Length: 455
Ligand SMILES: Cc1cc2nc3c(=O)[nH]c(=O)nc-3n(C[C@H](O)[C@H](O)[C@H](O)COP(=O)(O)OP(=O)(O)OC[C@H]3O[C@@H](n4cnc5c(N)ncnc54)[C@H](O)[C@@H]3O)c2cc1C
Image (cartoon, rainbow, N blue to C red):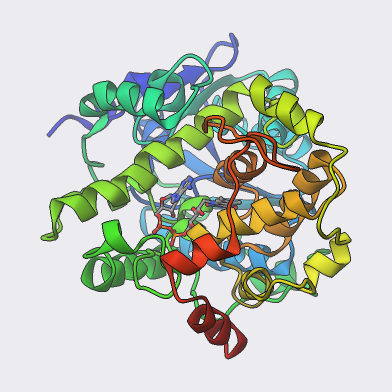
């Protein structure tokens, strides 16, 4: 066992500014990785504090608005944060909930606590990059960024936007061995700091949220790290065997339902990786699952980090942009408005059921998500409008929305990102097409539709 002070692989860590580290506590700004265990950013903060003879406090900034998130997603996050506060208290680590814009609130907290160092997390999305840049300008302390979300840190896996899963898989495979270590587990900090922050008044926080309450919380999936780990255990027991054959079937058990926990960082992907690797199931099922969890998920961070147009048609590869442009004037068999789509009011019962599944449960099956997005392209006046509509609906209703996986999945479906050119046809040009009949060959559509209608 290594000392507390040398557990974090230095390749996970990046210095964001030149300010010298000062004496004073270490603030870990938790944002994307909302968990008190299996968290390399927290571990790095603890190590830094131990070396400096000081202590760590964790701060979370609750922004009043975040990329169109509604009550559903805020509720899931807040319930998870309550557990984080408790777990941190058990480790003698104070938790500060700051309401407002991080660019203002964090430098204020740094001044208030006379902090010497700040640790934040790697995140490929523009809004979080902008927040970090703002904090770097406003705060005169040493600031470090730790990739606590990816098994292989995004910047280490590749130094460029990858062309496809094939090119990325190769690079990831070469690096994975260097990042396979298990999280050491920590008892927390000895230096007394537990009473520094007031206990958060969560009821007040939740009642004051100014978010769209028309999208209610869901009951079927309970938030938090503990519930996420139970969800993982259920999947290992009932869903992983057969995953390779069944993952295209929305009527089957082959879905882990882990994406909301992974999105909010309530569960660490590395923990999932290790549990799946140890599971006593056929190798082909493990491989198929780890392809999604590792290759596809980490490829999404790669796409969003290196392509700042990840949610716009400008982010599509040249061949796809050109073919979609050439077919922009093609007659559409149907054109629907955003509100028709939002209420699941189209001629296609499968598409309507998919939309309804998302409205009701906050989670659409992965295979259907591709069909869903491709039909939005087919039924919109332009690819740009289709992309906007898909992002809006995905981010408003999916529990796991506003995630690099979402922007990449939509860009794959509508804009050929990470895909290749296919046979040319109307509207889609050379972008891969999916049909109702094709879905019918993969699974029982009637069964899916009636299951969703009875939810
Ligand atoms: C149009 C479209 C929109 C999508 N929107 C989102 C989104 O907003 N948030 C989100 O997390 N995922 C999104 N995905 C990716 C994928 O569909 C979901 O991650 C998956 O359905 C989540 O369910 P699960 O956890 O039960 O998946 P499982 O099949 O159990 O997969 C396990 C994990 O692997 C990862 N994964 C699985 N499929 C993919 C994929 N295609 N790309 C990247 N990672 C993947 C996810 O982290 C997932 O939780 C989208 C895909 C498409 C095509």
